[in-house]
Length: 129
Image 1 (cartoon, one colour):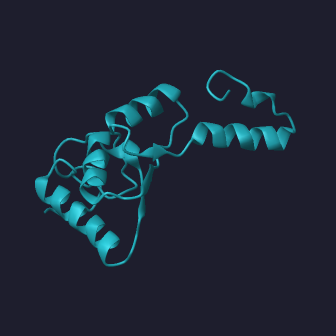
Image 2 (tube, helix red, strand yellow):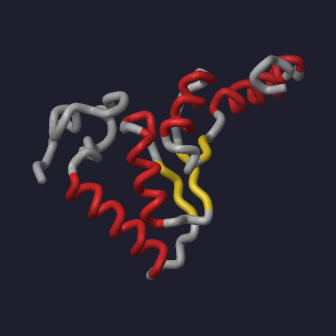
């Protein structure tokens, strides 16, 4: 595998949003998939992890998260898909075959704004009930 000092130009084309602030892991590479699956299974079997948080899931295709979950069988998993767009979040969950949940950053911002403004009517829109 090739070392990528600038984190933006290595491996195959990105399968998600390019994130130059994070390591550029080529999830389409079979060796990367195998190593990731082995590592997740080691976390489960040797260290007793039962759940996983997948960081920066916006940076790679959701089907890879599904592959890793199916191969390691965690009790629970959550993805960090930092976006407030309901359609993008819904699409990611569908593309991951609903194997993982997602952090709800839209709700986080609505709660934060509601608390700061002492006004909770923002929470009553079509997306949040």
